[in-house]
Image 1 (cartoon, chains in turn orange, purple):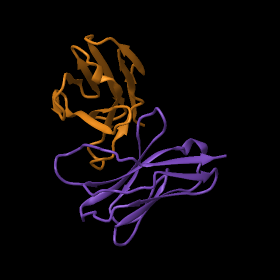
Image 2 (cartoon, chains in turn green, cyan; image 1 turned 90 degrees about the vertical axis):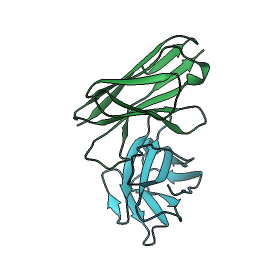
Image 3 (tube, one colour; image 1 turned 30 degrees about the vertical axis):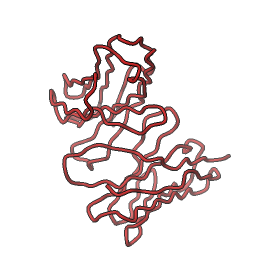
Image 4 (spheres, chains in turn orange, green; image 1 turned 180 degrees about the horizontal axis):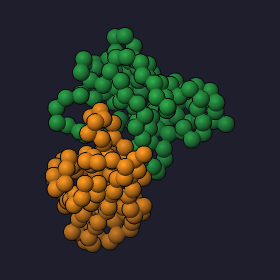
Length: 114
Length: 112
């Protein structure tokens, strides 16, 4: 069966510090991968999605970036965090054989920027 | 994507069926109805989706009315672990958009 991992589970970082969140998927090949953010009291916001290694599409211009160095690895990064980057970061995957919006989410990383 | 309307909250007794309604009166012919849920402090969880036929999987059943203007998600034997916010979304199957967006959903509380 397929499993998605995210780490760390929680993170507290000062403003201006760098960020690296990692997501890996097991049990599937060539998945579509997604990074979402869910801010407190707000809805789900798609940040990046990837249909293959090195292929990243950005939905929202901001100080975050994403990379997909391996088929089942998706990384979210920032060089300098802002207070507004606080939120619940979720990685998701989808099988290319599945319905378009049948996405499976990881446990999330709760980021607090202080 | 069509707008969906759900009650803000519902209660259900443990072991009973939970029937969660969703109105999507402006849904178009190529829009699917998807259901997700989010347990507190966890990532969202895909439950089920359908176009016009009723669907069932190991988690739930989805009943879509013949005119497709509304649907009901049924959890046949609710447990305390089913307490969550349930989201009903109508999404176009075509195009290049993969973006999931949730509305306010229904907070289902399963009581012992």
